Image (cartoon, rainbow, N blue to C red; front, side, top):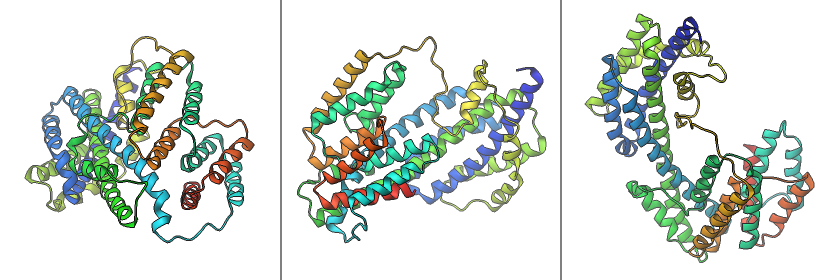
Length: 422
């Protein structure tokens, strides 16, 4: 990219990243004040971020410090994501038991009529992406009634479509499958004692003999856990976005043409929020800081219109900036060097068999309802491939009709309808 265009790009990136940083840091303070339990888990890192912010405001600061913070926050998000996977397993179980203990309206359609309705929604999909999303949503909610051997065969068959793809990406897929099945969880799960307590309450439940009192206790554990988890995940994502905003500022500052008037507004708000954090979150935001936010109107939009990265960009800083400004706050910034190694069918079969062996060991300590939930979770991570609409119809109808637990069948139909409506 020639020098003039590069300076224009860096200037736009600087304006956009700075305005985003100011707004996100302000929102972060508000969030920490509203959710003190969440604040406790991330305030130590806010102190580390504050040192980099102080350096930036003094014309210094380094991306190396942010990379350390980024790595730690990523590790925390990995723990929270694993908790989310675990809670999803038990949500699947509880949703299918709900009608045993809570009065619900029965479905207005027979299974055959409901399947007709589902297939109509498939036919009206505007494109293949929407169709694939609808199929995945339906399949993920269907009752699971497979023998273990049948299930393992389905897993290996679905993995076969990945032959010829990147091995590193597939290692990531197998990691996701293991976490979705609760057979590989990251270290430091115990660093979240409240989440750990809520999850333990679910793990200890005997779902085969669950009565109404036990069901309500499990619902309570789930609701407490998921509410706290959502707060923590939101805080983690917002914190990562702030890190990425500041990272983009440090990369672009040296080449950006800076509007002095805007810079004063940015610094006024950022310093004001920084002062509020230093005095202790929980107090109402300074009115002068809040009023200054009106001076930011239109800056993000006008800056974003001027940001255009070239395809196949060779400059590593520009490639990093594109990722830092993307909608994926946890994107990997460093790129793999060298030619990617591809997986053949033998490699996939070996990895698949190893995964199935791990599943078999895990299933030995699970009740049947939890085992079925794990099977559904694993299948939801894998490609959904049907040769024809008739085959899809047969699969959906067969899954519903083979479920002799009418409460579970009705719950599955209700959940599928919700998914298709949303």
